[in-house]
Amino acid sequence: MDKSIKQILISTTQIKQRVKQLGIQLSADYKDKNLVIICVLKGAIVFLADLLRALSIPVELDFVRLSSYGKSAESSGVVQIIQNITSDIQHKDVLIVEDIVDTGTTLSSLKEALLSQKPSSLKTCALLNKPARRVKSITIEYVGFEIPNCFVVGYGLDYNEKYRNLPYIAVSDIDF
Ligand code: 5GP
Figure 1 (cartoon, rainbow, N blue to C red):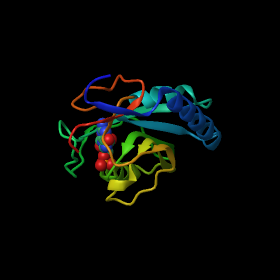
Figure 2: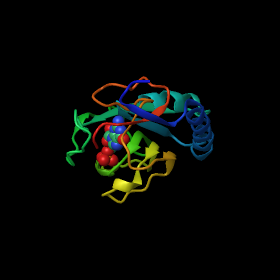
Figure 3: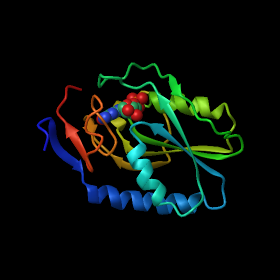
């Protein structure tokens, strides 16, 4: 294991099981709806790829990229859309797929921007929820795992663009 990885927090097996459950739940909840998944780049792509294959319903896919922590582990609090969706989401049932919700700043800005395009519904599926540092009050309808206040990497989540390829979620020992 890399020396800056302290411990495995969520194993590959645990992730697989939870993603399968989420896929079953989402397939039931969005049966007969016009589901559009909006994946938040880059961190959510690994989760998205597995979640998509756990769905048994038709789904449209789009991507959004937001300004993030950059090279630091601390959020600037200012969120900008760097790459916007290209689909028309008006009257569609939109599900945001996010890697992790921490302070909630990113998700709340994204929700506000998407709501202005008048979807029929707008919900969120986040792989990880870190409620300890929340500053914005937001609802996350589907959560993979609730985690303690630590900095995690792996399964799409990075630190300085490293560790996204780890097949598990690990606690990093970087200053946070
Ligand atoms: P928020 O706006 O909720 O504070 O932050 C959301 C974004 O911060 C996530 O999409 C992710 O990019 C980043 N982030 C928050 N906590 C962590 C963490 O523990 N590890 C990693 N790698 N990124 C995080």
